[in-house]
Length: 131
Image 1 (cartoon, rainbow, N blue to C red):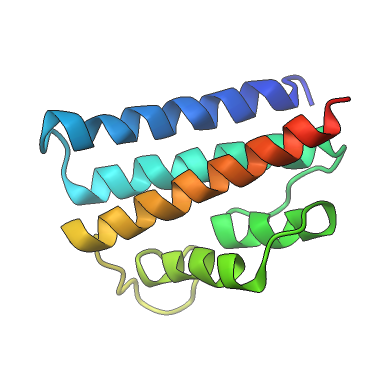
Image 2 (image 1 turned 120 degrees about the vertical axis):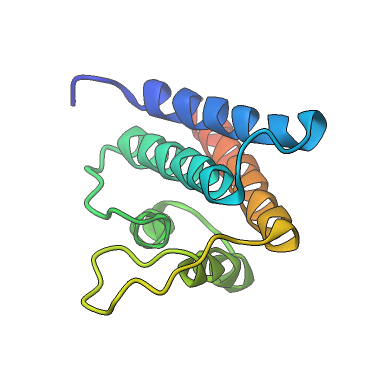
């Protein structure tokens, strides 16, 4: 790939930082946009992790990318189940009519928590393997 893993990882971290701004600055964006920013953040960080491990990402969803990353990480089944919760808000590449809904404020807090945990886990994996 033309861009290296650091580009994608750093871009994901920046999206998470931007999404975090809504906590401090009030409701500047609607919940759908906030959710999308968090999703992009997670997707980009996961792409960075996969590229770091010399793997070409194939999935288009956070859940799929987590599945692809599992051979390289030691994440608990509990955490993977947390990530799977994201499916209730967005189903990509589905034959079913789109019945997704934007998360409410409490649900958005949960999504933010998942994104933050993912950042911490990916950062730890990268730092442990940069030797």
